[in-house]
Image 1: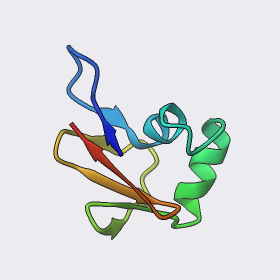
Image 2: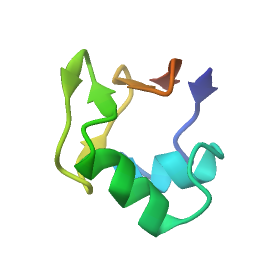
Image 3: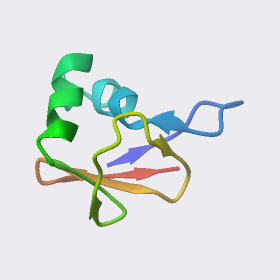
Image 4: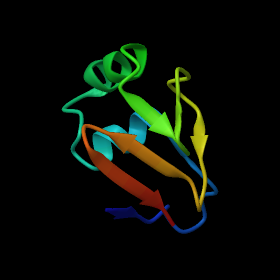
Length: 69
């Protein structure tokens, strides 16, 4: 799956991404996924909920990969 950052923006926060692509129903669920070590960014478990994702980053969660463009 690919996600295009909005024009004029440089990044998207991790929990925002999980909500926007429909992996999490809401912010609380997205935060819980991060706290439960279910999310990897660029191959490493990510514990920071608001980490800034930029083009070329890859997020892995629930057997899905999201490539940031």
